[in-house]
Image (tube, rainbow, N blue to C red; front, side, top):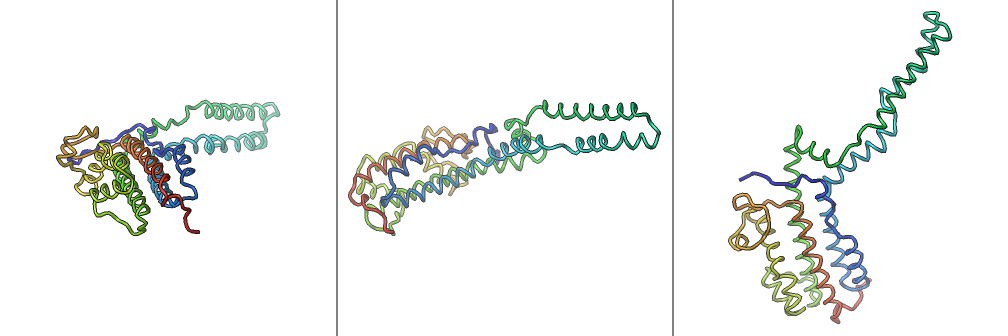
Length: 283
């Protein structure tokens, strides 16, 4: 039951946040009372996306370190051979009474070896982020990283959906002109969203099949150790499952953001047509 499932392709851990969409939605809400809840949402999603992409960043930091720092500097071996080139010919000439020609030959030989070492370093294959990630995952100590990557995908999924629901709560509160509004469950939130924003927005943002699947998955992760209830089992959810337990992977996080961002846009678009949202926030 504790078998983990993870995606070992490093590209899967690119940030799932759509920065082009962020720029568009921020421009839409600028200087309106929606600005604050949207900034709160984007802040949470960006923080979560940055945590999610840590495996990707780690592998690319290491490859950049190798390229920009290690290859750009002389290795300890190169520095040792350079010291030999600078001092050994002269010292051997004095100690063994070598001719100038012998001294020159020794110097040239050491210099040739040093040049060969530098050429070998320049032509050495660079670190590959994909291979490096798999080396860490499946090498010595790899199970610890596997567990961390597995947990990262599951935690980020829940956090992303939490932030979305909080945003919808805030929008309903603004529509009601009640800054302390907080629903006592999804059915209350759905009813209040329907009342303030209409059936189309409420259904799309809260009752749509994709949102329902995401909510049920979040609830399973948060409240039931990932174990699915019958309602989620009967849906075409597309998750990896071990027994009855969800195994969230990297692609689920990318898919979730794609599902939620269009619903944020829908909510914002509707809100900006309503008079209570046209006022600017207090200074």
